[in-house]
Length: 227
Image 1 (cartoon, rainbow, N blue to C red):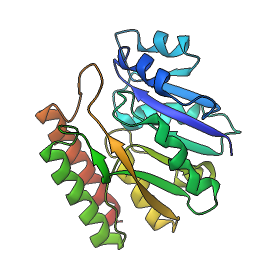
Image 2 (image 1 turned 60 degrees about the vertical axis):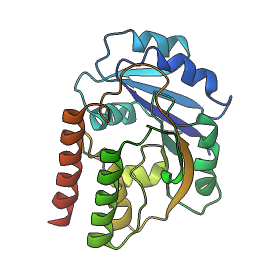
Image 3 (image 1 turned 30 degrees about the horizontal axis):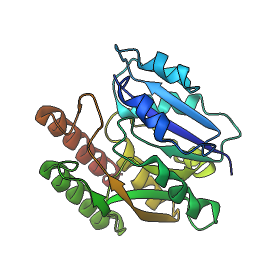
Image 4 (image 1 turned 90 degrees about the vertical axis):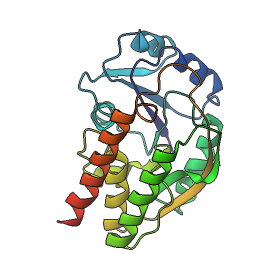
């Protein structure tokens, strides 16, 4: 099954070369970097490494992801999301896709809580918000998730049926809620999670941004629950 990798990126010119160097060769047929309004040459760095680059000036993880999906080749059968900061281990992407290739899953979440997180990689407020969101999904829809980790793989046909819409931090939880509501086969596998290798932590290291992200995630849960 032909796989495409999506990397939303905002001012990640320092991290991207390290990420591409760590990427196992021939793992992805296409790598799409969604430049989310960078001012540091992120797009040029990505193009130099052979990535497809799409520009989305509207800030937001979901907005960047939607722009990348618009550029996704029709032949792609598996879509993987990975952060640009090398906090996730690219060598584990093959394991993330394995249950889909084996016909055992439609969506695979890389769980940081089932795996290992380096000291300082998951801050206390992240851990609390993660547990709260997973608890609410279990309460409303009866499915036990352990993480909202952004490192994930999904079958292209399942993704198309989801009609993803969130343009901000609600993207990951929207996908997980829709997967449960659609009756998709969901698998979580343990992954390693580390601190970013360079650059600025835009969300977890900023209390104001973290609070906003948490509010958007909770709002997304209740919006779907009230439907």
